[in-house]
Image (cartoon, rainbow, N blue to C red):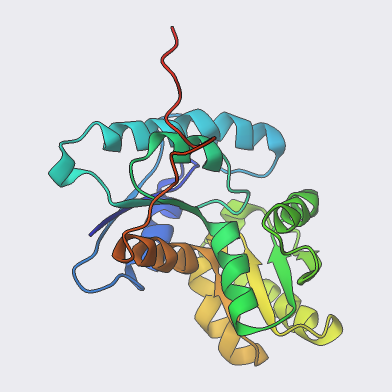
Length: 237
């Protein structure tokens, strides 16, 4: 099985990080390829940057779909918590496409009734709430907290990001009386296991959740429905 993990930004360190997180949960026999666009923003922290990232995401899906069938990915993971370009990628891809926010929220509701999201910047809080509502988790998602940490600060050597994110997760678990905490940024992926052990409730990393879910869909023989809106887009000049 081949899984292509698309980091929607153009920062190589972030691509390497999500690749490691995905490979950590790869099934035996699964090959994980982490890629990034040749164009787009260095990080995604606004609606503007999400929009700029979408052409690069679709570029990476289209390039993979142009490969010979034996080399083509069986599924894709979009590694940004805003799930940018998810619907469009599903139209292009022959296999399933899973966004990390959608996967993380699903996983959180499988291990508890209520969850909180701990994300990077305050300006992304409304987007997390919007996605929770779209995916059917508005009632389960009881709070969204922002650490006010820029995305690229999360993996910077010497950064206090781990301590900051851990403290916000601890506060969310206590103050919101939740059963699980969802990490609302792909850049937090490497912190997941340590934080879960420290705060005493399940902590969900969307990259790992999406990779596992994508593999499961392939194993079940399931892919995106072509009966309606996710049919391949019609040719246009």
